[in-house]
Length: 438
Image (cartoon, rainbow, N blue to C red; front, top):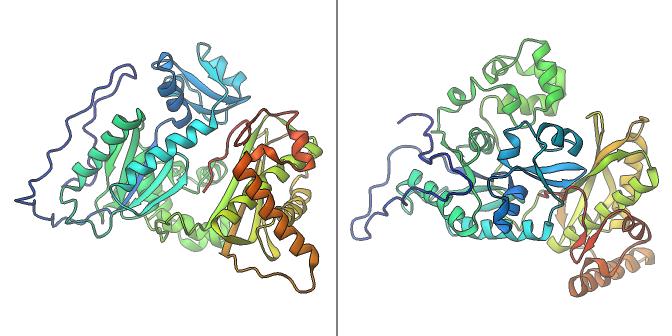
């Protein structure tokens, strides 16, 4: 069998729904023999141009037209727009110069969340081991299903087709032995890509690809490698690990060395066991207004704290990421004094990080909050800290009120200020780029 199996799907006109017939399932009376070939059990499913595709499904008049979603910054672009050179995170001024006939829609986050859940429910009919890495980004683990799905390739084609038939959204599918290779495989030939990487052929598959395809390597790292004559993953895999650790640090350098060889120890995480939670958003045109940025950080901390409490988790560490309009990024993580899911504690630490990271007189374009090192919430009332007890009861009351009356039923002071800049819906503020959280 060839190392990479190409999709049999034809290129689709967005106005025409044409799909191949579903693979014939083997008879129950005579089950097909289990293949002796090793199965690439990790599958990555990526919804193509998610926000823009949902808008085209909701409004059939947009099908076949270039569509841009967002406010000020492109959160998602349809493939008709991408063919004109439009990219995610590009300003609308740049995007409209490249694609003047594009249709701009502000975005409807509640619909995106609904369609993401529909896709997830379909995936869970194939395997219960489904991880939502982002709204449009899923990992599936098919380990132990060899007898249930003897025709593994046909099963994934059927999955791909079923998502399209039930939601109108096209997805790209990649299967491999590790998460990093599966994600690269699914994103290599979008839209509606399909690749199976047979175990043992990972390096053969990765070798000719540019280093930018490797998860964890941004344009800054890619530029540093290019200056040293390293442009492909094959060339990167020949760089000694100590050299990469010296250039990028022990953790990132070691990670790059492993992933250049297709190695990735991450497992598919079930929804009940998140390892990190993040919220981030872009800012139209950028800003240097520290009051506004502080309010935005507070709001993101509220969302993170609420999600932590929903999962029954506390965070030991919190990280802040900011990106300037000139694409320079700064990120730092700080350990909390004690594990917490209280947004006041998260916000106080996040603002400490902000004071350290916001050191340039350049407008900030993106702000993101991430909490890691999550523990089970086993909190008991504090014997000597009555303030902590009050915060615990207050958070419970706020959560209950928001679940009953909507997120906007209660706001902290700076959240009220944000309402002057953003529209609000029952689920919260309508930010420029809704967070894709994991």
